[in-house]
Amino acid sequence: MSIRPWVVVEAPDDRGLRRVTVGGSPAGSAWSLRELRKLLDRLGYPDVDVEDPASVCWRGGDSGTWPDQAVRRRATMVVMMAGLLASGTLNAIIGWPDASSALTFAQRITGAVLVLSGVVQGAGAVLVPDHWGRREFRASGAIVLLGAFIALAMDTLLFLLWLEEKEITPYLFAFLPLGCWAVWASVLLIRQKAWKGLPRPTKFVAGFYATALLSAVSLAYSTLYQPATAPMRFSLKAEFGRARQDRSLPFVQIPLKLSVKNTGEVSVYVIVNDFSVYGRTATYSEHGDSSERAWKESFGEEEEAERYVDRLSYQRLSSGRLYEPGDVLEAGQEDTRVHVLQIPRDVPYDLIHVDLQVTYMRKDRGRIDVEHYRKPYESWRHPRYACRAHGCPSDTLTYLGRVRHENNLVNVTRAPLYVTAFWSPRARPVYSISSFHFTGGWIDNAAQKRELKKFGIATRHADAEVSVAELLRFIPAAPR
Image (cartoon, rainbow, N blue to C red; front, top):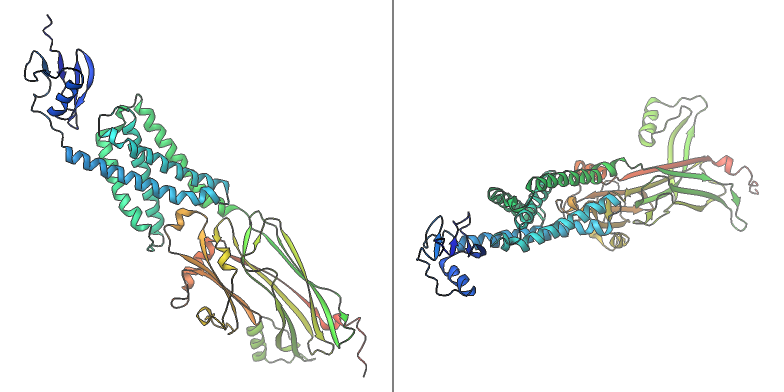
């Protein structure tokens, strides 16, 4: 007869779980004496005397050594599961808009990586009971640790992005608590050496850091470098055609050809656009005796000055638009419009001037809620949306739409932004992009300039000028 005991109960591990072997073969594990009795009962040995040294060998303690703190262990398990599920959900919510609809391929990949990281964290949450339980799956601890590291990296990134503006957003109350949870979870799992169940833990750690580095480089490239280096070029042209005499009225018809071409590599949203035709009048002096004061006044008002021409004055003759606000100009797209201007035969102007301008936003920098932006508010019907900037006329069309950064990581760390444009046939267009939403004062100019630069908003101009004498050169003189 062998003197070796039949049942061996190993010493408790760091969680209080004791492994059990029966007849030299692993039989399971137990958290308490009660669980040990249930285990032996399931194996068909209900009458084993656990106090008999001939039947049971206790290592690292006797039958009363059960250090498991069940309440604390289960509470830790619940908090770990809840944190992983919450963090995984947050990652998926942030990443899905980019993964499904981002303009650039790199940004879609970044969004897909965030969604995938959320799936990994969900898998970690499912494996938490195994890691805090009997650890039947050897990689459960490593996957849980990976989920905690993902949460820590993601929440750190969100916090650093939030520090740029320090604006209160709903997501702030999600990623700040989750960041604290991620620090606690990572420290706890590192102390437990959660990766030690893997057959080759060193390769796991090396692979994790390599993946994290590649993801960080990809994110920086798609967020910062690529949108900043893609070229943006526009070609605008305005030219007058040959004037024609109206057959039935004492008016002259002047064709005006306007062309816009997006010659860059990036599609754009049209924020606002305008073309305006002016007639110029002036006082002429053969001796060039314009006073210094008149010279300065002329230059200050019109940014033009001529020695023999004084008191330059421009009168708006016609205004219009080529595009509706919110229209998209694809890369390489070219549009042309011919506008016919009609002026009296005996106009007092010496020059006719046209000014064409297009204000756009790069699509690789942000997205506009076009459906709402295309609906204008008439200031005379909706006084709340009237333009309050200096020089704005009372009759304006107001365009207002939510604008979002192309990278959704930035959106969740910023307060809502709106693009606003005012157009009137009697004044130059006015536009802004800020958190201003007709709820308070006007706009912080410094903040607005920063946002205009971030979204790649710019204005392109083209103009043309022709003398009235040249236009009427082929028009028969009016009968006296």
